[in-house]
Image 1 (cartoon, rainbow, N blue to C red):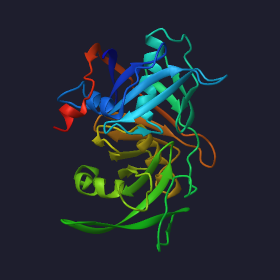
Image 2 (cartoon, rainbow, N blue to C red):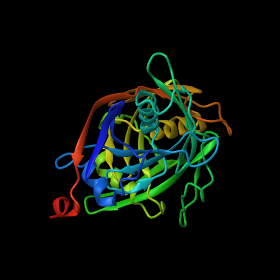
Image 3 (cartoon, rainbow, N blue to C red):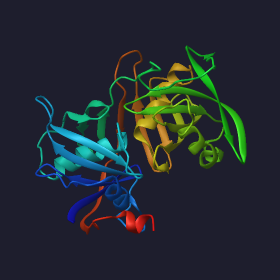
Image 4 (cartoon, rainbow, N blue to C red):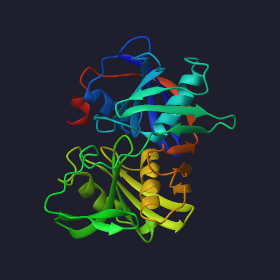
Length: 297
């Protein structure tokens, strides 16, 4: 199967963008894994697919697959690249678009300076909707909110950590650390992602508060591992920091890939994320009928 693609990145979080506005490619989970593979495929943290409007009042459908091939609800950095792609490809002339994702409707807006602002919707705190299912565990009050203790157990590690839990289209567990650069992301990230309290797995954020308007952040993403930036993770970290009494309403989030600007007025108001979206190159690739033969042999 010969398919065209566009490689894009937002703050170092990189994507393969597929245009299915005319016809579906019929890709399998193994195909998405192949495209994301940095040895056999194109290489990406996520695969983003553009599809036609699924309903009145919606401009496009936005489908996201992680590097492991699993479809997920949301990707904030990807949303900015999605908006930049449909505009640059001539699929729309609008600067503001409404996009249907698995996690809900979002509204990216392209600015004259090339950056994109995404209305990520209101954060979700209801545990059943996140979803978060703690067993025989009680939260600890912190600020105007709470943190949850969870125990991480592995052959080389046993630790009890405290996380703030929130969903921004997808679930996040945010941990406050003293030094993001030294945080045990590689060791703890997979254990948090697969912890039994999170029935659909979770993104694990490690947030260092520099001051009330600035944080440093690293995120282990579901199905992708640590990425250079995670847009929804940045939103989740800022929301958590505000509710914990650590941050103001506008925060610059320093990631390995660059700076994202996050704003949240609290309550049911939407979280706004502003950052870059850049096309790297365009190309085409021949996909094998059964990529699993290459990836898993």
